[in-house]
Length: 630
Image (cartoon, rainbow, N blue to C red; front, side, top):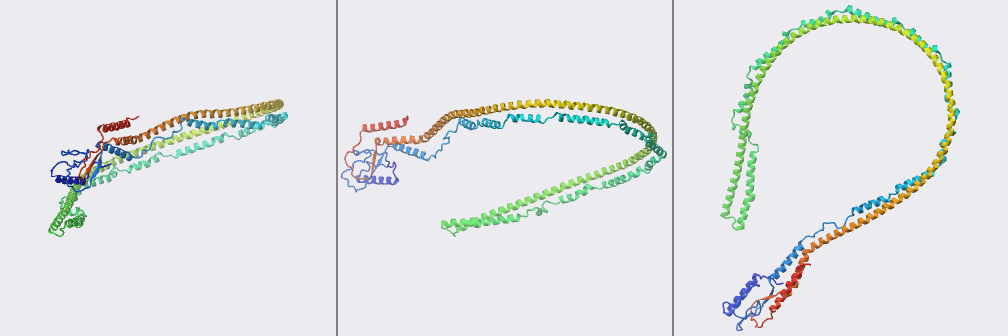
């Protein structure tokens, strides 16, 4: 397709040809070759051979032969429409590949998942019943009615009336033997011997001895001797001697409190605070101040040497005036500015360091004055504390004297009380001695009573031993009767056990038959349970498969919708391109010819107005059918 715009070179060439054409005709005007392919000025001097043809030149003009250029043009709305299609296609091509984010395959439905589980469960559903049936059948192989009855038969065979009665008969014989060996006098002898060994005098003797000792201690007791140590200690005490050390220490503290401790403590700090803040300012200067100032100078000189001066030289070299007076002047100004900046920074650093040092010195002097005030207050407080301590020590001395007097009185009273208690102790010992004499007498009486009781107990034991012998004789006869009864009962039990053995064998055989029948039924139930489980799982699987197919159809429909949505823009642009191609034959075209030369008088064939209208109507109808949609 031909370009709709002309280059500047083509416009210049057309303007030159126009000037030459006007000069050749000596008209000074007339037809003008336009510089815009879409607009042409009206020609007033002849008939146009086509829509964009040039006017016919006079036949008597002698023109130099020249090449001409013909360019086909189309309406602006048509070319704009084509450019819009290309822009749309470019935008579609620039879109990144859109990945479908939705699911493509339908998952197993809950019904299918349930059917899978039911199938898995049904596979082993009847195993329990089959295992129970197999176990019941196998257990019946070793069952026998004879085996069930055998314990009873063995029990009958092992029974004997003589053996059952034998223990009791033996115990009866033992009881009779013990009765033959019984001795009533022998049973009473230990108590008679104990009664013979008892003595009231021997029982009372220890208590009588203790009573005699207590009476001896009473005779040797001395109440005054017990109180004498406490009374002597009270006589040796003195309240004055006890108070003297505390009173002396209090007098010493009063002497210390008369000294001016507050002024003495504050004087060193007041002397330090009296100095001026600038007298020792060098002490507070930053030890790195000189290094900072020198570093500022070094960095400024390096910046001037490595950056500013080379930049000035490069600028004048580029201007072609290197080494001139202007370069020297610029270099001097740069050096002056750099030195001023360095000096200003160094002065600021020195001023900042001096100000910080002066502030630190003033703060230190103020702190010394504050310390002097604090030391004075502490000294004054110490004087007050010494005075209070002296007064306290005097009070302590007085208290010591009072307490010593009170202790003397307490020791004298304690001595008197000790004498009284000692006298009471003597009376208590006398009472204890009399009590022990009574206890000894009582023990003698109790021992005589115990002798009489043991004699009576021995007589009672002899009588009981005789009665026990008679009881053993009766027990021996009774055990013999029991043995005979046990023998009779054993024979009866043998007959009963024989009947139980026969009944147990019959019942065991019947139970074995019932167990085999139950095992057969359980095997059938297990097989039926597995069949029903698999049938239900198959039905549920069919429902789940239908649900999965329906879900897959929805997923496929969603994916097809996604594909249609992604291709909609391309489809629309393709329709627009088809409309453009369908109307290409009906679009009026114009031609533009550049250059100059004689123009033939032949009339070019042009389509009629009706043909142009028909072509345009067909193109519009084609576009409308494309964008109408389904």
